[in-house]
Length: 123
Image (cartoon, rainbow, N blue to C red; front, side, top):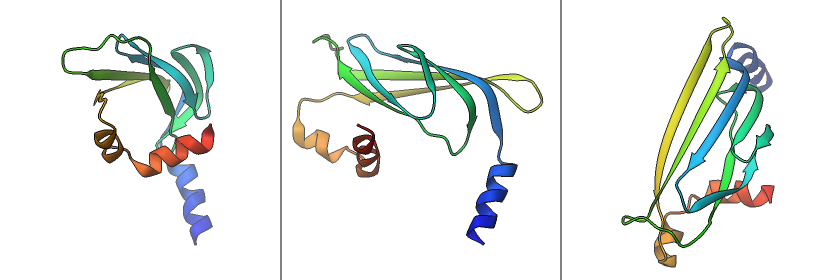
């Protein structure tokens, strides 16, 4: 039954084709690594042959220099441009804001253990 459900999911899920994805982050930060099934064209542009709801990407960030904003935030924006099954070009944009902190206890309380374990296995 499990195999049947997984095959049905693969056949019936919504797919995007010929996708490109650009990831931008705030000044003072840099992307150190990408993890996932894609081709890195340049430091912030990715080529994704096909994308679907079960596909995930991970990035790791580093502070480039000591430039911090007043509220110590880092904004991350990703834009995915893809072609759907009907041949229409679509774009999906996601913006995420994180707070940077020098307090180690606060940092450890905000970590998602499953996400951290997945990134550590990729290193």
